[in-house]
Length: 368
Image 1 (cartoon, rainbow, N blue to C red):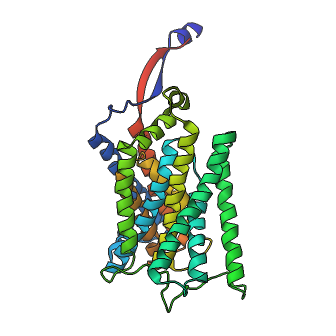
Image 2: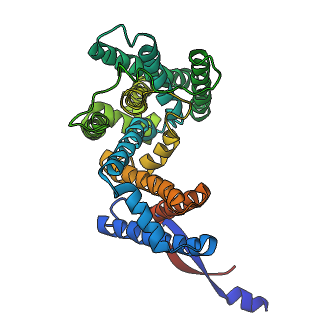
C-alpha cells in the first residue's frame, strides 16, 4: 500500500492570473454574455419553483418596465446617469487604492448644502443666480466630506475605509436633523420644495425632465476618460495605486496626490447631490442617493476603472433594478423575489470576471 501511495499520481488544479494580453477582447465579452445567459436560466428555474409564473412573462415585464414608454425609458436613462456619475466620482480614488466607501455621505452632504439654499433663500434670488449658488455649495460640501478622511490618511495613515464609511452615518444624521428642524410636524418627510415657484429647480430641456442631468453626466464621462488616460494627474494616480514607494522614488508627492484626488472625488459626489436635489427630487431625504454610493463601487470595479465601460455597466444595473421593481408590481410579488433575481444576475456577472482574469489549469504531479 505504501508503495502504491508513493507511486500514485494525483490530479490537481492550478489557478493562475492571466497576463493583460492573454485573453482577447472578444473572448472576454463572450464569457460575460454566456454568464448572463446562464444567470437567466437559473432565474427561470427559481421563478417557476417559488412563484409558478412563466419566466418569459416575467422577463417581458422587466423589459416593459424600462422600455414600455418614453417616460419609463427616460427614467431608466436618468437612473443610469446618477449611478454613472457616482461611479465616476469614486473611480480616481479606487484607482489610487484609496478605498473611498463614503460616496453615499458625500452625495448626501452635497444635496443638503443645495437644499439649505433652496429652502432658505429660494424666493430671494433670481433663479439662475440661485442655481449657480446651489451648485457651488454642493460641490464645496462634497469636497469637505471627501477631504476630511483624505487629510487623516495623508497625515496619520488612518484606515480610509472605516473613516469614509463612518462619515456616511454622520451625513445621514445631519440630514435627519435638518428635516426635523424644517418639518416641525414630526413627519420626518419633506414634500417638494418651492413647488409653485420652482425656485432652484433645473429647467426642463426640450420639454423633458432629467435632460440636464443626463447631458451633465455624459460630459463628465468624457472628461474623466481624458483625465485618467491622458493627463499628468491621471498618470500620478495610476503610479500611486501601483506602488507608493515607486511614486516617491520618481518624485511624486503621494500626500498631495491623495488630497487632490479626494477633492476631485468629493466634488463630483457633491455635483451628483446637486443634480438629485435640483434636477430630480426637488426635496431631500436620508435615501437621496438610494444606495448608489455602494453600488457604484461594483460598477467601477466591473468596468476596471474605464469610464466608457462604466456606461454599459451602469445601464445594465439600472435596468435590472428598474425591471425588478416592475416584476414586483406586475405580478403582485414580494419585492424580495425581484431583488433575488437581480442579485443572481449580478452574481453571475461578477463571477464571469474571475474566468476573465484567471485561468484554471489541470496539472499532474507525483505524490510524496
